[in-house]
Amino acid sequence: MLSKIFGNETAEKVLLHVFHYGQIHASAVAQDHGIALTPVLRQLNRFEEAGVLVSKMVGKSRLYQFNPKSPFAAPVQLLVKIVYESMPMETRESLFGVRRRPRRKGKPVL
Image 1 (cartoon, one colour):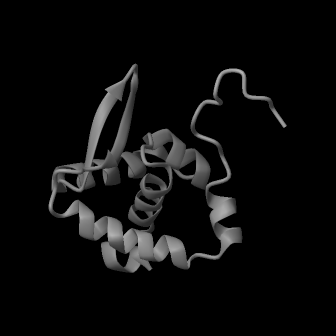
Image 2 (tube, helix red, strand yellow):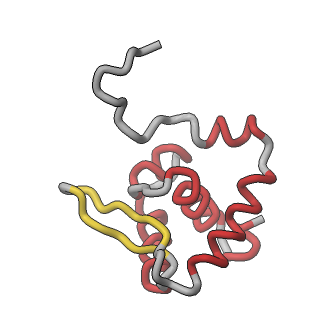
């Protein structure tokens, strides 16, 4: 659905990943979907130029997230939320099955 609104499937994949994980780096989106890194970076840069996303450097990685100060980010985020919540659970699990945050120190591995 988002690909029809934003014009391409890469935009949909990027926005869904940012929504699900909160913060994301380009290589994670490319790796999860098995696509090249260049179109993902291009789309992330477009959203950042539009003010929907912001980025910050963490070490050598650039992390992207929704821009909390932009008046355009909230409506886009709401639209992404509607699409995300309408997805079947199996689809969500297949797209976002990779853990992106480190495990808490001392937490047992099950």
